[in-house]
Length: 83
Image 1: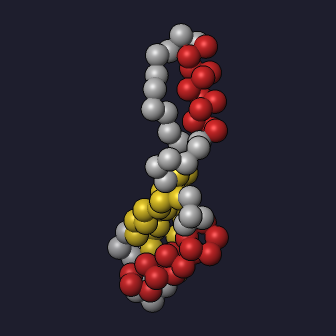
Image 2 (image 1 turned 120 degrees about the vertical axis):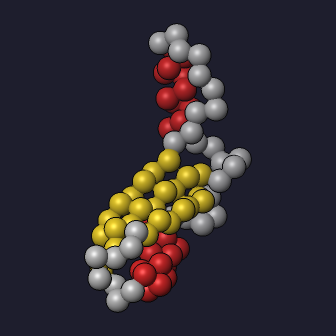
Image 3 (image 1 turned 60 degrees about the vertical axis):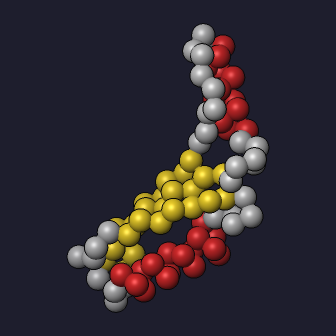
């Protein structure tokens, strides 16, 4: 079965986010009054597995091994029902 998958990756609270800081400073230079800017990464893919539970386990493993750094990142996995 094929499962459409989305992984949302964000920095944990207290981690420096230079990309967000640069965006916020640039917007301020353009006279936009913004604060608490944050950035996230969204990774979407289709995974082939026998069932949804196997897909969940494999995507969790992918996050731990490659997609995220668990020390500095939080992540949220969404797996849609298979086709």
